[in-house]
Length: 114
Image (cartoon, rainbow, N blue to C red; front, side, top):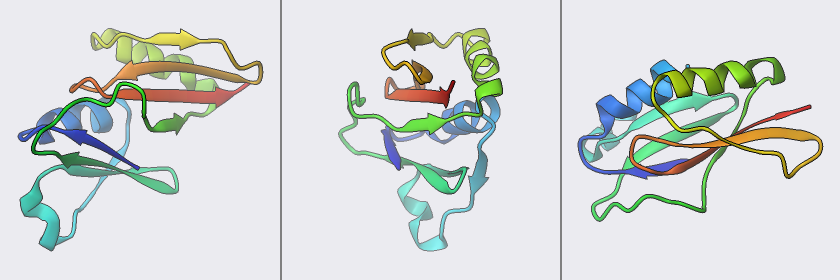
């Protein structure tokens, strides 16, 4: 999965996805490093923060990150403490979830089964 970001996004990406969300950074192949951006391991998948020349945040299309049920509230609290707005959504009976925005305004969904 990938989210787009503007040039110079690497430090903010490492803070948000690495420090706040606890995702481990994955080393990009040497041949792609000059393009910028950062890659992270997200469970069995990777999340790529890629630099987009004419960047505009994705407000509807978004990645969804599955969180262990016992860790969802802690994740929301960490984001709130860092000044990130957390919007809970109770539209699904068997799923607890919330939305937040990354540092560039991309929508990110966090979900856990009940």
